[in-house]
Length: 390
Image: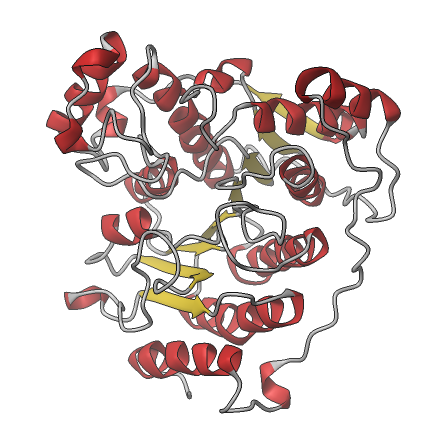
């Protein structure tokens, strides 16, 4: 295995652009890439521009009629078929939509291939993590589900157990749906409770079907959950499940929209807690999957202050050179931020909450606490199905 991590990057991924005023502003990708460079992480990585996912790869997850609909809308956005979720407020059609979406998917698929074959220790595609796209439709700003496609490619290459860990504020519904009946894939999603946030799925009782019962895991967190509760919930569920499942590869999705500044959700997580969970995913991949780790981006709509810093931390962790939270951000990058957005960029790589304090589940829980109630609901729904104690 190569000692170097791969960063999947092609400037053309910024063509995934739903237009002015849409929350999914591609500037968040550009600014992340520039911050990675400004902090010198390029020297620790192999930067790779992979080919777009071809139609045979897309069909590993998506229906042929849906792919055809995306292509048609891409060629003529005015003809978008709303029955496929295209041309909606969430997923406006735009020229070149198929090409940009397939390119992002291709980066995630190539990342999975590199990690599986041992060409890279870890691989990051922060443009990916588009976890809401369904086999037959677009949803939630997502056209092709690159996370599900990466997992499907791993299975095609011979993987027998793949763990998917999703810490986006929204439920990873599209990935769960893709592998709902596949016992080879364990999907774990920590997200804001479906009562208060799109897509209104991800209840603890959603546990998979048939031979795959117990391979879908959902932790529905109460609105307002902050650092201590979020990190506690992660460690109360994820490590035990990965130890039992024994994945050969860990694929994780790191949407930055759990942050307290995010305009589209209601958790209160800091950049520092996001970094702590990124670090935990890296360590768990080494502990349970021989270090085979594919890390993806996802949501995140505080596009200047939060997303670039969060995903730069992710890249640094994967590269083996984690960025000290107290690191001062280079002035040149802040000037570029202002030139591009007329916003002032952050000064340091922290929200001032490092190190993050949290209490381990093993130390005891409070059945009257809303966060602990959420964790208990998940453990009660899933752990017995996997032979684990609640």
